Amino acid sequence: LSAHLTLDPAFRVAPVHRRTFGTFVEHLGRCVYTGIYEPGHPTADDDGFRRDVLELTRELGVTTARYPGGNFVSGYRWEDGVGPRDKRPRRLDLAWHSTETNQFGLDEFVAWARKAGVEPMMAVNLGTRGIPEALDLLEYCNIESGTHLSDLRVAGGAKEPHGVRMWCLGNEMDGPWQIGHKTAREYGRLAAETARAMRMIDPGLELVACGSSGSSMPTFGAWEATVLEETYDVVDFISCHAYYEEHDGDLASFLASASDMDHFIESVVATADSVGARLKSKKKIDISFDEWNVWYLSRFNGAEPPRDWPVAPPLLEDHYHLADAVTLGGLLISLLRHSDRVTSACLAQLVNVIAPIMTEPGGRAWKQTTFHPFAQASRHAAGEVLRLEFDSPVHETERFGQVTALDAVATLDEAGATTLFAVNRSTDRPLTLTADVRALGPVRLAEATVLSGPDPYARNTADAPDTVAPRANTDVRLADGTLEITLPAVSWNVIRLN
Ligand code: AHR
Image 1 (cartoon, rainbow, N blue to C red):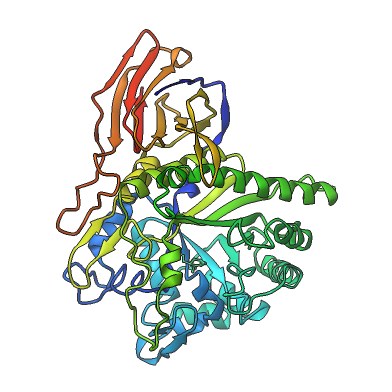
Image 2: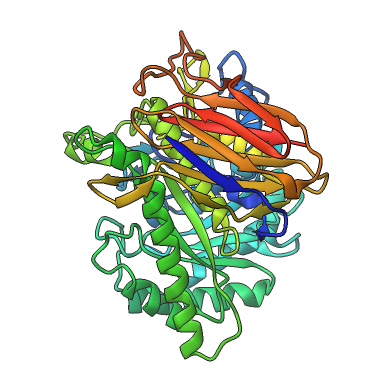
């Protein structure tokens, strides 16, 4: 197979938004407990945060972290998680059929986020709760002192306000599984009134209305239109959530999941803009793709529901392989390509729960295969996103029709370094890519890495954590303004020129 593309700094899409590389920390399974927080662990710091996980989080390069859910937030009382630990109640978590001990809460999360160097992004409960509780939470978080709730925060040891800028108005309220699930009109009204009230405290907040929990939802499209009719003037973002998995051994479709994500994003942008046009508004609503990942959801849905209420049980601990990582790389390409409207995104989730980082309780922390494309993209995507036009062979897929074997995006940073991110979605054939880079001026090849291998289903484990990891691609040449590189079948590639 062979493909061709042109890299030209004149074709700019938008800046690379650092918030594209956000993540998600939910009170779910072992994400918090024995994930980021485990007092007594050999690496635990004074706050009980695992230092090994903090280090991996920094290496992963995540920039924001959404908290505390997810489905969890729709039954959560944030007050349960603040104040003296011995007074915090144990509660039933209906979303995940678990017991929430509340030993980790809001202040601990913000302290952890500061140590990890990530921006906290908060979700309010619009399932079982409403405007007053959202206002209380905002007052507790962002008011310096001198009010009941801000003084409570200060008394608890958090002297400085948490200064949370970005807030999700509920979670997946279109889903019948959501506690307090609503119709689009009901939710839109509540979200609008909550947003208006929150802006009375701080007009500068960035607010996210819930979009659909997936593009296959029966209300997809109509939901976004109705919610935005109600909220257009008072929110900045509409959310998208998407999870992909390989169905029935159909690897070709799975590797092409990004073509579905492209379609999803473009549909939501069109819907938002059509509402804006009807409202005669000049404002544009951005997308917060605040849950995305590979998730073997069909296995989770097919599993026996729990009978008891365990504390931090192992849930959704998907064990990723090479093809999962390549697919995830493709999803990152899709997000970056749409940087003109996708200005925030969260890989769901960070630790143990459908996560790039895994931990053993009391033991080791290690990187899943999916860690690598995310870390490389976060490290090297900088400056401006470049639009690429390319010629590539196409093949037919069962779920997404005709797709190109090549998918790619590039970024150009302020110092003039260009990074090309590319996947070969062919299941069995290498792809020779030639790129015309003359428009970049005199450049040299700084690095070319590839994530690939003979077995697309190879996995990392705690004992063999580097089985699937990027290695140098030596099958590459740069001469006379032409880059030529071989991309193995089922591979994620990063090529840096400067
Ligand atoms: O990330 C796991 C779950 O997926 C979240 O709790 C929910 O919002 C979504 O359905």
